[in-house]
Image (tube, each protein chain N blue to C red):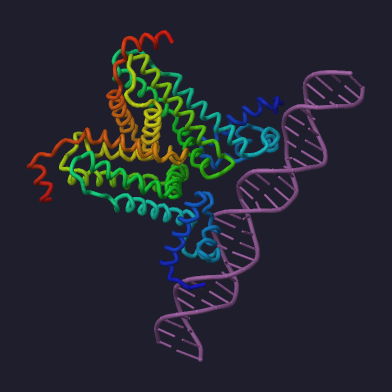
Length: 210
Length: 210
DNA sequence: ACTTGACTTGGACAACCGACCAGGACAACC
DNA sequence: GGTTGTCCTGGTCGGTTGTCCAAGTCAAGT
């Protein structure tokens, strides 16, 4: 097979691990399965990673980054009233989740595994810190697009967004009812619109400058 | 050791499996670990259960039942206005979750495992069917206690309740912030109060009779 | 051309897993 | 008291896992 510098080989193995774990679950991501998926022999994995756990941690970091980029990447911001802006954002967010069932399920497997095994200690908290921060960025976007501010602390709203998205996603993973998930999330979106207040001209101008 | 009829031995093994899995995670619930926890020798497990999967399915059924009884068991219903009723119900619900971290985490492990392994096919959907039904019963209770009805289909609200509770519980499992979880759930409770409408005297009388 | 260092190979190892079995122990019944 | 059937024991088996290693391969530098 092709010879690759260790850094590139690492990336390839992370991608292979992601593919196996997304397809067949985190338990199926054995060293052998990952090596086979990447088309390399067994020893290569331990040449690139000290541990299997180091590989899993790298994989977790990769999927977390990918999820965040996917969430923040394709957000529309072409609307006037708050309701429409939020509706569009949620629509895009949900479409991203719906089209990545395997990775989504893998994220939850990683969270629970992290909470059980000390070797993956930091994985779960990093996942959620990232998601909470991303939710706050979404709030920023809505603020700027619809010229509003929030009557509830941003951190509190961000935590609620992540919680609601997690909850409806889990239910959708279980019973496959996309329509129920979409409706539930849009219902939450309409609630979000009720806690948005029109931004004062001053504050809005300041926001535009900054 | 004591000799027990197979039915009682099964119950004991299920309890042992529940203890091991709640303490150390679902992966730690090996046949050997369960046998050791129950204080019986290895063969007993396969004498009482055809498969390891049959044991896990029985364990899943047990924890699901336990969760539902815990949720529905200790619900207060001594209040007048909707807000207070909902607040009390959520307080009791959250207290139950907060005091059972291990089993709670195990429930999510069971859900994800069920979605990956065909042998546990029905576990997740049964979990959620039970929770959705329980949420509807909670809605009934609030209806009767506060003399209201709901302006949104009960099934939709029930799914939202389960989703929100799941979401905040997961976040709490990750970062341990009980206060944030409690506040988030109470915030959702105040929203629920806004979609409750006073029941007509007629409807209320009918409900009392039935 | 030859050495050096980076990368790869495929097998070996101990540990653990679920499953299985031959036989021992015990209580109930004839 | 002997028999029958239920329950328990402890070991064994094949398979899978993570980890390690001696040897091989290849490109780059001298």
